[in-house]
Image (cartoon, rainbow, N blue to C red):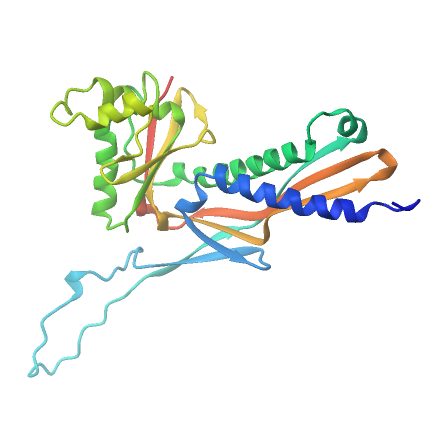
Length: 289
C-alpha cells in the first residue's frame, strides 16, 4: 500500500463482507417479518396498506338477492367500505466503534462478530416494532390469573374463523408463555384433556418445543415484553399487520475514522409497522411469572 493510501479498497471489501454476513444472520434471526404483510418503497415518508370489506359496510351473502328476468326494478346498491392504514416511517440506527488497538490485539476477526451482532440487533428491532401491534387487537383470549392454556389457543382460533380471517395463522408468544409453570408446555404435559392423543405431549417432552397446534404455527420472541407479571402474545393472519420500509433494508456501512484510529460499523433502517385488519388478530395476554 502506498504512503498516504487510505485503504479504501480494503474497507470496500470489508463492507461487502459485512453486509453479506449481516443479511445472512438477519434472515436467520428474524421471527415476525415473514408472518406479516410487507411493503417496500425506494423512497417514502409513509406507506399505505389498503383494506377492503372490513369497515361498517361489508359485502356479504345477505346482500345477494333473487332477481328474475321479469323484475323491472333496479338491483339495490350495496355500499362497500375501503380504508387506508398508514405506517409512518422512522429512522432506526446503531453504531459500533472498533479501535485499532482492539483490532490488532484480537486473535479472532472482530468484523465478523460485529456483522452478526448488527444483523441480530436489527432483526430484533423489527420484531419489537411488529409485536407492539399485538396490544392493539380488540379481540382477546386472555388469562392473566392462571397462565395460558390450550383452551385459550382454540378460543383465539375460533375468533379468527368467525371473522373470516385468511389462513394460515401464526401464534407468536413470549418464551415464558410457552415454557415454565405458566406456559403452554405445562398445560400440554400435565393436562388430562389430551389423554386420548398424547402425541403433542410427547413432542413437547422429547424436543422441548411444539411447532404447531390446530394448524397454527407457533413462534417465540423475547421482544414481547413482560409487564406486571403478564406478557402479550397474539394469534393472527398475515393480513393483520403491515410492515413497510424504504431504501436498503437493512443498511450496514463501514466508516474509517483514521485520525481517531478506529472504524465505525453502522446499521440503519427506515421503516414502520401498523395494524391493518383488527379482526384478523387476537391478543393473548397471560400470566407468566
